[in-house]
Length: 138
Length: 132
Image (cartoon, rainbow over all chains, first blue to last red; front, side, top):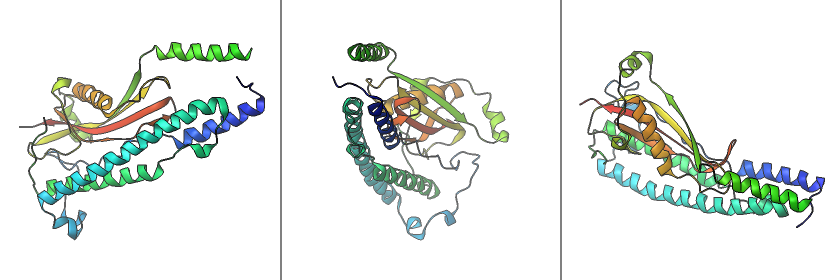
């Protein structure tokens, strides 16, 4: 077992802070305004959508949603895999002070997940605006 | 001395790992006052009957009760990470207390370190009740 000097503890504290910053939990994205209630706080209008979106069919809306679901699942999987890697780095970092570059930040995946969620919200509003039907999930 | 320090550290970790694997928190954001008065009289519903969906429900009319945000955290670094299922269970319980029939537009964060935990997963959705 290596002995722990004051310098090692300082380095570990700095490293731990860097790991914590890089491995922070991503918050759940904000909800859109209420447009779906029988007394909604916001009414949906055509001006909220692009011309391309307004031309989409109900089937097209669902198809795009399914395609982005697959991409989101891949992003989430990549973040999960790297988290296991980062936790391992963290465990060994407490003993051997591995460099910060050994951790993986996943900032691109997190940003892409936020973009996907925004697109889902737009598709959900479009789905309602076009009065597409949907089966109530069980 | 060093061996004793490590020994104490490992013993503490093992003791903490015997505690509950997760803990959770929740907040509810309710709509404007004019609608809130109608919603206040809702009786609690059965959590098992609540529909959880990441989509909107367009085939049945509903009224929003409030936006529910929950966080599920693991209690020690050695426990398993919280999953969306844990978040769904928490959303169900919270929404049931509000008298909801469903939680729509559910979205999740990603598991990571938070201020109070080595692994936290956040989720939120809109608690609604059907008006038909």
